[in-house]
Image (cartoon, rainbow, N blue to C red; front, side, top):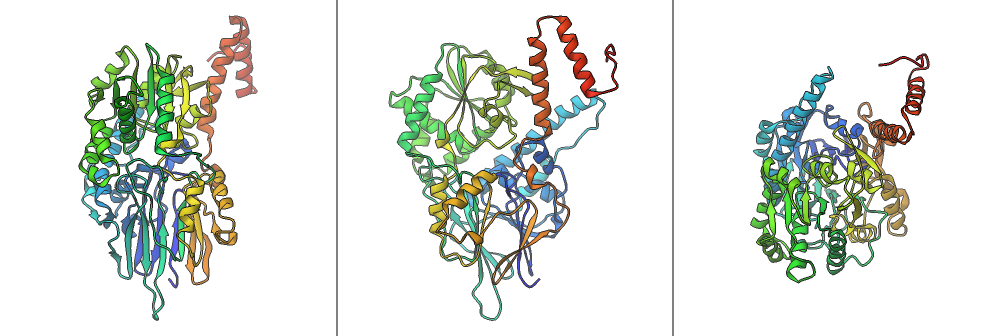
Length: 537
């Protein structure tokens, strides 16, 4: 192989499933191996074979512990990967609680799915991986402190730079040795870049003068005005005050790692300063409780770590660990706050909280992070009047609110400034980890900073040769798993759910049984042109 090759097996034209494969003469390395989230079409990729041979991957370099970056590592191990997984010490600690939780959720949800499938005479499925796979995977982690070079393969070394995104998060610099006395080829994978106002973390860093830059673009088309810590707390205070109802609740779907701890810190501070009354706060997530212990161990590494510790000692803060404790929240009286995983409402206890409260007008749902296309969180955020959760229909009467200042991602101006600080860029910039609108928004901001001809937008599973004159698109190594127009979009599963809800609404709007029967016959004819008007199922 005369030149290294870089393949984009996730986070290409979408935000989740981060996975980049670097092929060199010495072997193949993965940068991240994350789980897809969003529509069912995208999530099905988690169950399908990898588009490469896991046993031929020599090593993995992991940027951080979020599941969309780490969540398929146990699957990689299950299917033959036996190499080292390089990460920062804090990332390893967090992966030690997040990956077992991921396996537990899969085992639980697959058990529920198979029970429903058996009733419908459908085939059973298996989890993507189980707890035993996670245990083996965790033994393959190797810790490295930020700034320290470490060998990955002969002629390939790497080091971590603080990304300011979450505890342990890092951008990854890779150096590939070249013969004949040439300078090494230098690549930088941004991973997820944190905003300047990020609670608990210093501003992101990185080297300058590299050959290829692979940069996230999640909020590339967003400009957060007045995004300061003080402004964030004022907006949170106002949202909590507006949500207060004598018999109500404020539900905050939250990523269990980082976001939950930030909210605990800020709400605790607002209560301590008298900006909010002494409201009971319930963190309904075993993972958040375990992750909070990791944050407590690392609090001296965090900016405002003392504020976090003070918030954790507050008498009004409660963690629900068992299923019984979680169910008891449904019987609570008086206004309270529930912070529950998952952040995009795709799994976990937030779905049970939504089923109990979404149809009540005394409830408020506050989103504090990115909602990927096709997720329940995005559907609610986009104004759905009714939704389906686990096969049941629910009217949406709760107030739906969003507060974007808790995002762990830099906005467009911050990303452009971070890219500018990496210049000069010898060759190309790849924009990844963003939906098309965000990618184009960031590309527009880079006008005059980076040559537009050097800004590349890889599609899922595309491969590029990293040559001496720049990157050359090679196409795909095998069949494309998903066409670009189907990535980061609603799919037919979403359409069916919407159709069922619309049919129910239409039937309820008919004045009597006779008119409902007419409508049902019309629907039957639409489904089967040969159907007879009086046929019954």
